[in-house]
Image (cartoon, chains in turn cyan, orange, red, green):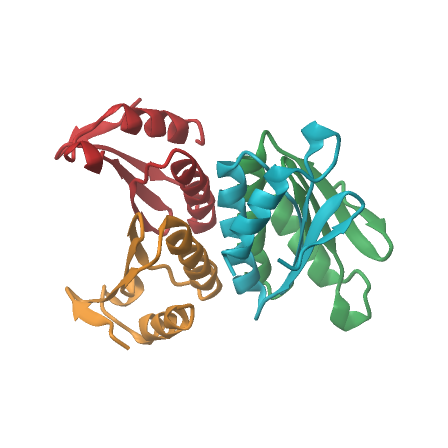
Length: 77
Length: 77
Length: 77
Length: 77
């Protein structure tokens, strides 16, 4: 996985063909996030998406929950 | 295009890996439909989607609007 | 709840202001369905949505899983 | 409208009941954005959404396109 750790967050940037592809990806991320009861920070503009993962309940650090969601998200690409 | 004409509608069935993939596809269809001001009949259960296209304003027949949306939808696969 | 039982399915029809409102509702239904691992039959055309619920694993009858998802869906309105 | 102008962007923060409500709102924003061919910067974490509007083609300033999309987005609340 090419996620980077920055400011105690696991981060990854994604680039899609266009906005529709980017938002369809975000819809997958949204469904997975709610299912895992773990919600990322999402940033989007046009065909670009940035996902940041951090476990707030654990004191704003990266935990197993973040790696699990990261792995799920990678499988959507 | 492997759309079939049935009951004056243009129809196609799609099968995806799972529900998340099917719903991400429907999100693309939804955005395209609203953009073209032309809304399909959508049927979904789990990983299966059926899209039916018909132009109500033209007397419930298949028109150029339906072929245009069908082509857009095919490009999402 | 004004769901009706028909052909061993729990069914309800919803009418929204327009397609955008209808699809935003379907997005909520999709997230809830995946979270509960129980997926409805969804029918949509423009501002109309029909949801049908049935438990296939239990022999295509209405079970507690269907009533739970129906209650969740009703809370989205 | 309680949008603020900051760094040549029109910005507004929205707070929803939960993530599902926030993402259903983002789905409406996504459909409207694609329809208007004008895409916002979107930030989301759980029930919070921040939308930033700016017209890149006009030299990264706020234009009529941004006010139009802002008005559309406000109507979704």
